[in-house]
Length: 422
Image (tube, rainbow, N blue to C red; front, top):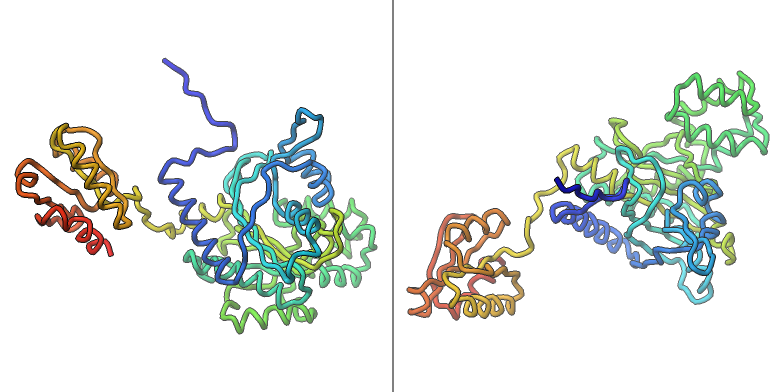
């Protein structure tokens, strides 16, 4: 028996039904992004590895990126994320761009991680950023984009919440606990990991970091405080804006949301299923230093990223993926015998002139087989031109959905099908 070569671990094959879902997701992303006035952009798949080291640290650059030497000896990476490329492109034309700028992108990424539910090594990701304005209004806008997308794909506030926090608020709160400045980065990372490890282990890590048992207890109480956001002028402003936009039901405060990446400087947020199942659907926040980290001048920015794997899993598990067409062509033209092939393809071309999608069966086989094929691919109409129809200049249109048929003049077929599909 022949051995079938398997795909690379952590990658996916997109059969037509899978590709239809990905295309549908991209269309929803495009609709929401453009509804807020964001422009689509793209960056190279390959970047120099030091670009990611400058933004995300050595762990991402050395452990999670797919890295190789090119023939010139440079270390090149398959992009593991897009924000560094965004910062680089902004820095290159910083004085030419119009601010505030609103950009979005959707494309492939690669990370060398352990494949698991909601995570693969190759994935597609939506990135959306607002750069060049420093106000809670723009932070609220980006969160609103995320909430609008969740609403667009059918995820209700009873199924999903965008959990919001602010690093400035947490920094001030850690000051009150007496956490020294040189320990804050470590504490932030422990906060980010609290719900990812046993509580006893988490407390031990806090002690190892240099916190006292009293500080650990105070930190636990802090993380459970659902009203802490009222101490933040910025968060009160953000929640008020989202309320007037009619999206407040999607938002809740959570002091545990800190985001693992160190470059966030203000608002941070993640969307999760209320059931707690799976990873974050999307996540992002406010960052001020990224453009300057790649050689540009400082610019305020806020944005988020959403991978296709987790959001598709959530939609599928909740029964929210729509019934998508199996084929883009809703019309099949049959062929009675080989001598009719040219007529069939000529008719197909005429129908396409009406802006319709058509499949011509490529060989003369028994009509029941062609009808079965039409049904299996999801075509709605079958066009039949047999010897009797041909002699009279007529064509039969069979509607497989409504189980009816009609015979009309061949010259009227393109317009008739256009009207039936309108």
